[in-house]
Amino acid sequence: MNLFKLAYRNLGRNRTRSLLSSLAVAVGMSLLLLMASVLEGEMGGALQNTIRLQSGHIQIRPGSYEEGQVSLKWEDLIAEPNQLLEKIKALPQVTAATPRLLASGILTLSDESKGVQIIGIEPDSAANKPFRDGMLEGTFLSADDREGILVGNTLAQKLSLKVGDQVNLLVTTSSGTVDEQLFTVRGIYTTRTPGYDENTVFLPLAKAQAFTVTENHASTIFILLQNDEQAEAVAQALQSSNYQVLTWRDQNALLVQFEDFAGAYMVILYLIVLAITATVVTNTLVMAVFERTREIGILSAIGMKGRGIMAQFLAEATLLATGGVIGGLIIGGALVAYFTINGIYIGDYGVSGVLMGERIYAHLTMRDTINLAIVTYIITLVASLYPARLAARMEPVEALHGAGV
Amino acid sequence: MEVTKVTNATRIFKIGEVETKALRGVDLSIENGEFTALVGPSGSGKTTLLQLIGLLDKPTSGNVFINGQDATNLNRNQRADLRKNAIGFVFQFFALIPTLTAYENIEMPLLLNGTRPAQRKARVNEMLEAVGLSDRARHRPDQLSGGQQQRVAVARALATNPKLILADEPTANLDTENGKQVMDIMAKLNKETGVTFVFATHDPRVIKYARRVVTLRDGLIVENNGNSSK
Image (cartoon, rainbow over all chains, first blue to last red; front, top):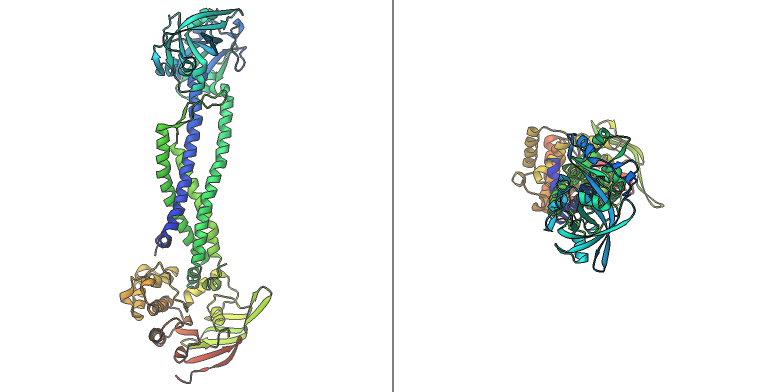
């Protein structure tokens, strides 16, 4: 008689209870998978959003740059960014590098106005792909457009802007004087990041430079790489005393910290879920021990040692855990698959400095799946140790009389 | 040769502040091949004595010997090993594992002592034959009558070829016919294989089978003699 065959039969004595226990493990594991995938999707999504829309993998900033600063003073700008661009583009890891000019402005339509960040972009750069791909109406900017402006759909909705509408844009130029000009809405874009789309407008770089009187200067050189992990090495290669080379980590310290904090917080949630699961398993097996006290006495009387009796209950826990983990992979896998495709709508919800999309798309790695399955398995087995030991420690004479421990 | 010996054994149970002296100093020696009944009224100590001999319990004082070995101070695992190899049990309640078939119940002690599969199979079938239940091998306990269940228990007790079988009120839950069948089988096996049977009972139908009757009262042996009716 195989240990597991006997365990299977014992679990079959009370099928409903065994199924519910296994289901508890399955639900616990599904929750873990879902939580892990949503966290991974949220953090990964926010990070990728921030990298592709705001920080890039690397930015080259003037030596005087301070975090969050938007200044059009000559000393706060990079002169001749094209010279630097050649050197940057020669690096094999670089997929896109483009100068950008950043300025603060006020956009006015009739009697409504809104503070915006103006970004002067080279329209043809591959770095603008997220905006080009996100065009909802109208056309993207062209490099020689002298009157066109691109606005986000959230801003367009708030100000009831349509393609072809004229808006007044007001900026403080590099010399400190205020200038304003009428621009025509060429297109409306979305990045699916409401906070970004509400506050950011694009001008062609040349026009932005002319408008702000910054000639051929740029605020930053925005660089994208093949992957996130190349940032440190490329930054090292570009180091210079003339300017600052900031990786995405340097620029998104808050996000990185937030990710660490969320990770730690999630561990606590994992433990709570696992503790509940473990309690159900412990409870099931403790009930089984008390129901089978006399049988434990019989087995003990015919010579089964404590460790044999313990193995019996551990085998039952192993089957419960196996069923639960398989069930968890199926249920959790289905939930994760659904939210990976459809996402969870969160709307315009974000933390300052972190660009959250309007949906969180679950993302689960194979490593996380395996780790969580193993953890669930181990916790379930650990939870069964107490009832198994309880059974193993019964004195045969007391167990035979159904007195147990 | 002595299969088991108990010397000056006492057993005191403490429930709260109350002490109950179940055995007050018992000396008993059982020779190989005996068919002995421990008799006495309820509370006389016969089941307690049987449990001490079966190493299911430890005496408060005194000693218990199995096959000449002092088993008094053995630890749990050592007692389990000795039970597995030297002692078989038949209980008052039909002490079978409900999830196992008759075959598997008899096989269990053989699994525990590591008997090889082929020998195991042969031995289980032999025991089923001996108790007249070959045609019930694949039945689970709930598909067997009380008498059949008790016969499976007898077969299981004998499976590992122990020298000593301890039976606690083996016919208490059986009707006359089934009780007789079980006792006939045990008496037959005793005669044919020489295995020693010690049973605790107050059933006169069982007592008449015994070749030796040990009478207990208030935790002491008050009579110890051969059965005049045999």
